[in-house]
Image 1 (tube, rainbow, N blue to C red):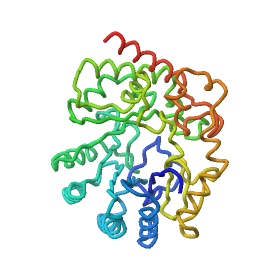
Image 2 (spheres, one colour; image 1 turned 90 degrees about the vertical axis):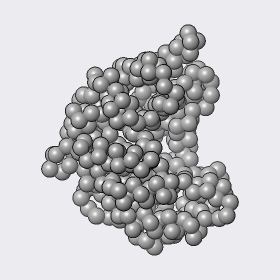
Image 3 (cartoon, rainbow, N blue to C red; image 1 turned 180 degrees about the horizontal axis):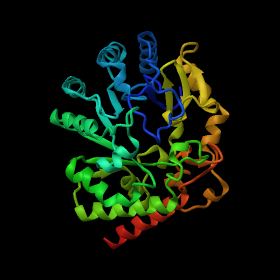
Image 4 (spheres, rainbow, N blue to C red; image 1 turned 180 degrees about the vertical axis):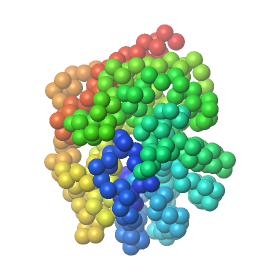
Length: 360
């Protein structure tokens, strides 16, 4: 087996209790109850723990993964304990909207040291604009309640904020909400971008290069003013790494997209992350029909991997090439081997932070 690959497991497929307007799966039936079978879960955990040595990370996603139920998650831990080797350390992460979090969930996550990421876009005005239930009721109050419950049990919560063109202008307000009102210490920022205009409910909400530059510069300046070394903003960390000529941690900066694979609840496996699940071009195998090792070996020899890792001509001589790697595959124009849409953001912010560092 080649270098270690990390799974993103959609244990409930697209099934979700929210209907976020910008969701990857907005065109899917998110009301359909599709939960991975216990037999398929066992097959996957058994084969994955057998493939690699040392530390392993399982990333549990959806839809909303907590809809699988607490007994399902208890079985995850049980199977990991059965099949892990003596030299292996297992890490579990969950990305959730937090609306279902209660004391019982928090106790479980604390006991088994799960890392929790919560999707929240800012204070109520920003969050409820697009993160709503099917009846159009905003989810802000339930999400914040879930975050506070996790924090009550001593669980460090990381937040993922999706920014749209609408909430870019509230950069300072959103920043203060995350780090003062909510009291989190880790933030990641995802820019909404619909390259082909497929989501009719989000017309004119894609974040442009200029929008994203504005947001990131604001966050950088606010972060420097706050001068709190315990606060980590994923994008700032990654840009600083590049500015001082070090490798960044995130996949969309360090070119490790092909080190991830997505397992859907039906056993279908796709290359890269959950953003590409159910895209035929990224399909690499079926766990119901094949061993996991066979699926991953097929991907390592595939044309798909070559396309993802290829660089456009104008990237070859860019000074930031080895710190950018043509950005996120999902945000490339014209397909997985196309040019990263936020190229100008990368150049501008790398230079902005390099100057800041030199001044300091």
